[in-house]
Length: 468
Ligand SMILES: [Fe+2]
Image 1: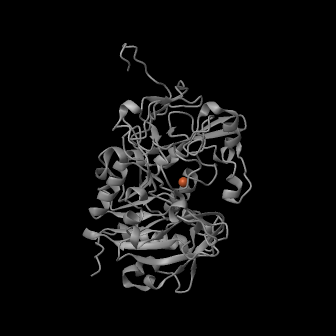
Image 2: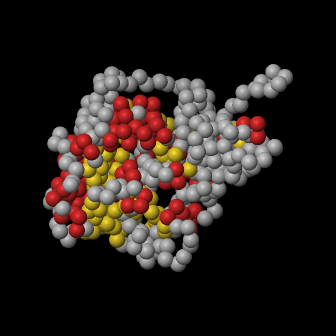
Image 3: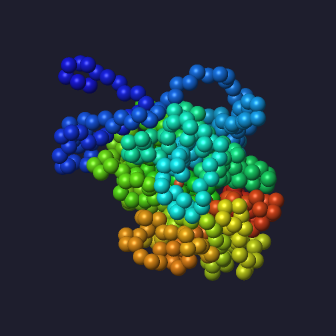
């Protein structure tokens, strides 16, 4: 808006909340000094709504079971999948268990070019970069837009990721990251005959605790990384009201992100100050455009994931995954249901298709100082991590020569269980690789067994008594 009435609209979400030519440095929050935040940061590769015309439509039949589906697009010998999520009709449920699809995280990763944009990607992953056909296609088709892991052509970080465009990597037959590994959990639920409804992050954002409350238990995907404030509040309220949460992932509940009713279908992220990130957020621009909230890690906002689910991110390592060993707390009668059918000395998850073990990729540990409840039981911890598994930046303020998994005993996943007031409970494995061990040996293995033991008990009505 201007004094001469020559108002304009922006398209494709150039960045707002940007320092103006007159920024004095006296304020960090654009809401406190809007007159110093008049700039708009345009990029030649901004994209919000691709605006494509529809070639066909599919109306979901009313009796289609709640689940994750995909439309297969096929032309000659090429095929692509368009994934979608069918929830039960609003206000109803068809199961006592809800699979909470991490659609905010899928969006953050949508069409990522990370391995092409990040010059240290091979040393970070300690793997040669392999490009699948989707990666090659995106390299050749910049018009499909970027993810929040990428950089604009001017070198600045991408803050917005939209689903109102073709998204190639939220699909089966894509690399095992973000969406696709979550299908291991769905496949395991199907295999074991455990009924579930599917709900999504955007549903949780809009409906809050009311969405979760009818469910006796909620199960996450492998990497529920991005949480808006309403999502966080909804999950926290659910746990405070006897909800039961099974966190079958790692590096979850890490970043505050935002949705806006004015620009539906897009996520905003500002990677302020700390955390695993591939570029620094522009100083002075840490406050989100969509909500005015301070961006960054929930941990830096004083709300670490340990206080929500008992564990939080500690390390990443992509070459070799470790396995879990039972700890003394696993023999506590409170935890006996978890280990039904598991031997005392049995190694848990020393197999799997992500690094050969159930503890890997990105792992979480318990930390009383960050809010793990004092009565939480760390029932197993992981071992066998590699020299290429490193502490996350938020876990170290000072680099030293013992930051790797071969040397540092703090680098481990803690399998954690605790009861909440009113009979609820939380079970966390703290590892992205966990679910990639579920299908081993035809879903007959100790990772699948422990997961099933927990789900079956969490679905029983009897409350979990709080320990004295
Ligand atoms: Fe991530």
